[in-house]
Image (cartoon, rainbow, N blue to C red; front, side):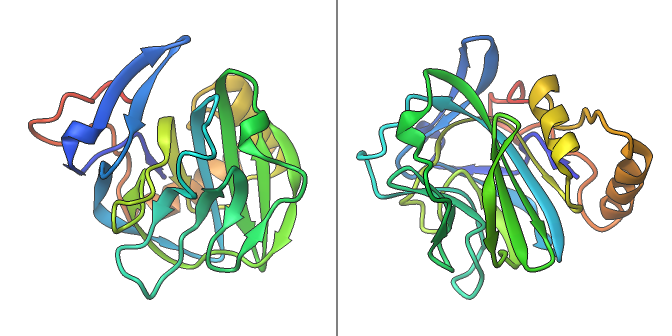
Length: 217
């Protein structure tokens, strides 16, 4: 798994530490973003989890990228497009949901890819399933690779190399921490995470030298 944030911060003047409404995190604006020290390969199964703060001004800019690939040949995995949650590459968005309708406060967003489908969750509840899934590598968090599509407020960001089921997603939401899972299949889930840990970073928990955002998680 990859959790918290570690690596180098581009344009640190646009990455602000926040401690509000019972949660710490960062507010990434303008050209701010995090460059991971090691890219994460998205396989056939993956789970991306993050908390984000509402209200979200969906008219402020067209796209908000949670993660992006380090080059133009690969795919953006999770975005908000005028508040619609989905995948930019396939122009696939969940019907009936818009981030502008979220109540004020922190909300949990979880995106799960399995096989040829992607399931989107908000606050532990499924919004629906869309065909297709993002592939490639993740190298940028909180913005596009060109640093023009900042996500905004985020906390407890994590990527898992396996697909969470509905109960596990609910556990992530209820626990409020991406590495705490409540499920009958916890051993299988944790074993799969351990295998992924051998392939990329075990845990990313601080930004890098010279940054003051180590309490992000």
